[in-house]
Image (tube, rainbow, N blue to C red; front, side, top):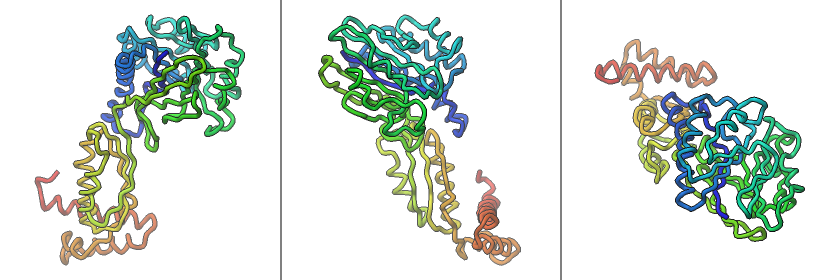
Length: 373
């Protein structure tokens, strides 16, 4: 048997910190992941896609997201999708899953009951739908005693944390050895957003479209081959995601240092598909900081999907040339020197003074160049 294991689509995720245009693109990419998964299923002759929870980012994803999801799955008529309620979209009476159960296309199965689902003559799916955002009991416990035909492949589908890394030690815990206890050929897990192997038969697929910084091995789904109940599964990573999220710390001594750093940013990825969080640090002249900010905010930021720029660690030490460019001898020079002295004292007022000095420098240059934006 061959199928695709995916999880944590979180359709409708708001991406609240992103600018509006980037937010819309990132939300659309999550819907696009459904199409990518369908194409992967067709290309690899794996007509079953198991979604291990958090199909939607909330129990009220909105009509457009809901309809788009069903429509995209319906269009992949030769692929069967099995959807499991997770902690973001738990099963509630007369809620999202009641509606979905009533409106699912023929190729979509809503796994909303803790009972076996036949996957043909030789395989059975054991789902563990979550009924609450947080659960104190292990929803996979019933797998151990589930009755299935002799020789059938037993496949588990669940959403939660194994005890090895659960961030909340009291909720949504799954026994890390559940596959062994329940005689599972494979246990497909969701909740952890990065790809993770727990043991030979227990895997997290991670989210198919990356959604945050600091995640390792994201943007994947897993192609799973099962030769038989006792045979170890063959698990292959499938690249699915469109966007690449990268976080980096860059140290500058001069604006020219950006040349090499920008050249090495996310090699192999189209700039428009990169989301970057850059933390800049170093001690530079006022002119170099302004030049670096312009290059990043006025050029790079428009090339990337989204640039989250942190310049707090990039400290300026204005030179005589910097101050002379504001004013050689007059009142502006005196103001600039006063702001420079205040900035050197540090603290909250020092930071405000430094920002004011930088603004003074920028505005003076704009005044000298009337056509400059």
